[in-house]
Length: 226
Image 1: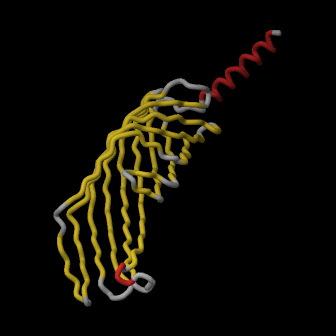
Image 2: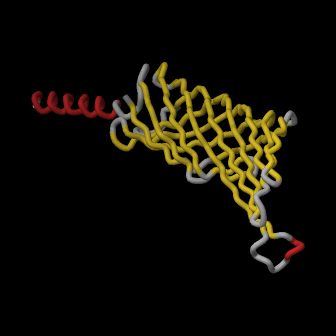
Image 3: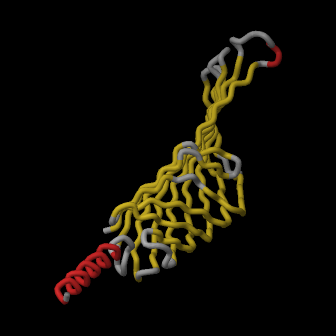
């Protein structure tokens, strides 16, 4: 009987040790890749979103994190000359492209949750470097316009999310947040080509966009705990 009891205790200790390996403990490191098929920001649809995030658990329930992200938006429109309605050979094409690189440190506080679930709340501050490019040309001559601008912005967010550990160190997750974001574009160049002659003008004006509210990105998060 004692041998059976001892064997059962050893099994329980082994199971408890195995279960404890699901969630990170103090000084554990996690890394993850994020892909967001579609993200809407300030009315613009960014269709290429990738991010890498690293987290260091300074305690069993607290972690500091750093997110490095990239997002891009491309839009194309065709406008026909109203003076030549019905003539499909006369049109103007406008192409807009915007790219953003994000550097966002933050902090997370994790709750106990279930065996494989690790819900958390936290906050992050993001710095954004952007670039915008607009090209306008037409079908009936070689005249065109090219505008390039640089951008800088930031966002401050309170976040809430959950990690689900699929197998040992492998996990998936989701996150939502509430925050303020501001983006400013300006100080670029505008090149106008007319009859083969190009004139370049420095742009000193700027445009600024701000947004406050919930943001929820349908990100596919896949990570590993070391």
